[in-house]
Every structure is written in structure tokens, then in C-alpha cells.
Image (cartoon, rainbow, N blue to C red):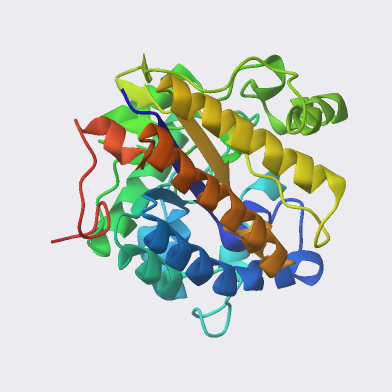
Length: 332
């Protein structure tokens, strides 16, 4: 069996960072996504990469009225109210993408949908945090219904789910399965990658993850088959692609070398290797980040020629083999 490279991206704009960043200190990185995404798409198309774009439901909206039309009535009651975006939606959200490009992204969703082989997946409606105190399973279900409603209004049916901050339990997966989703991205092996709340994501945990990016701290992170969890297929994550704050540096070089070694081992042994990142990680120092991505895609093409490695999206694991043609999930 041929090895497979899976790529998934958490597409969020400010919705993914608004609880700990501001437009003033991070808005330039978010705006940089508008250059980074077209550049990634062109590279994926040239290299035959089938990627999964897990998209926050709020980004499907073309204006503020459309956001309000699809908002769930049962909204998350986080103990930390700053985690909920709904106060900002009521008091601070702009009118549309032109006036508020940090929070609206419908034109970017269109570009993804129009690129061959790209899957538009679910990243919940509001960038929902499943393990933060105060919220409930019923509120998560309402959030997924809102995400489905706004995507369907755009003619997009999603098959895959990426949980924000990788927070999930089997009960949340069961609710996602009930909503019609078929695959989700689970956690890599290793205690530092276990699904946890924000307060549990300590400096020690983050340090272990950083170290594992360049040296073998956790177990081997590729796999032969997807696990079944509550009726869904767990397309396990292997590695988060890290970018640096500058154009180079020893960590970036070691990190890229580690990923290429892991990819080669997966290709050689016919296993799955799942790489993921956020588009806003490329929003600063975009050219340097794209150059590193070019190196990884060049490595994939070599492995494709040498070992027959294939590019699959998460949705391809819900089928017997990958499809071709229009974007995955795009309306006919």
C-alpha cells in the first residue's frame, strides 16, 4: 500500500486568535493571509496536493446580516466570557469583507472552492472550544448546526471536522457524526499532544511540543489505518508545521529536516503522514514560509516518484480512493 501525505489547514482569520490577540498586535498577520492563501493554492495545484481547509463557519458570511441570520440561539456559556465571540459580533463586527477584512473571508472561501482537489471542511461555526469550562454538549450541537446551515447556503457540504485548539472528546465526535460529518483530525501520539483545555496547555507542555519539532521526543507519528471513534474516522495529526518570526534560523532548518525524514519513513513503509498549520502562520514573513513549504512539496514529489506516495485530503478517507475534478464538497 502506498504511503499518503495528508495536509489540513485551520482557516480562521481573527476568529481563531481573538481571545488572546488583537487587531492592533496581530492584524497584519491576518491580512497577510490574503496573499498567503492564493500562493498556497497555486503551489498545491502545481504539485497535485489535495488539502483540507477546515473553515470557521463565520467566514462563509458575506456580511453582518448573514452572520446574524445563521447564529445559534443556544450560544456557548464559557466561564471565561472572553472566549465567546458573540459580544463582539453584536458590538464590534464590521459590515462586510471590505470594511472588516480581519473577520470576513468569503472571497477566500471562493478561491479555495474553485481550486481542484481542495476540501472545504468544518472548523465549527464560532471557533468553538469543546473543553473550556461552562459550555455544554447541547451548545456544541447548536454550533455545528449553524456551521452546517451557513455552508449549505453557499452550496458546500462538508465531510470532515477539525476541532478548534484540537479540543474534543468521544461525546463531541458522536455529535459531529450525528450532524453528518465523517472524518475528524485527532491528536498525535505523546502526552504533550493530548487534547486539553487552555489552562492545561502549560509552558512545560508547549516546550515539549517545540522540542519534538526537531528531535524525537514523542513516539513515531505516522500510522497505517484511521481509528474509528464514535462512528467517525480519526485522521490522526502527525506534525504541526512551525514557521519562525524571521526569514531563517536554525530551528526552522532542523524542523524542516525532521518533517522530510518523517515523510520519507511514512512513504517507505506505506503509512499515513498528516501535516497541518494555520494560514495566518504564513501571514508574516510570507516569502520565507512559502520557501520552506516549497521544500516540503519538492520532497513530496521525490517520494511520489520513488515510493508512489499519494496526496489525500481528510475526506478521501471516507471513500475508497481520492476523487478528481472540482473542489471536494463543492456543489455540482
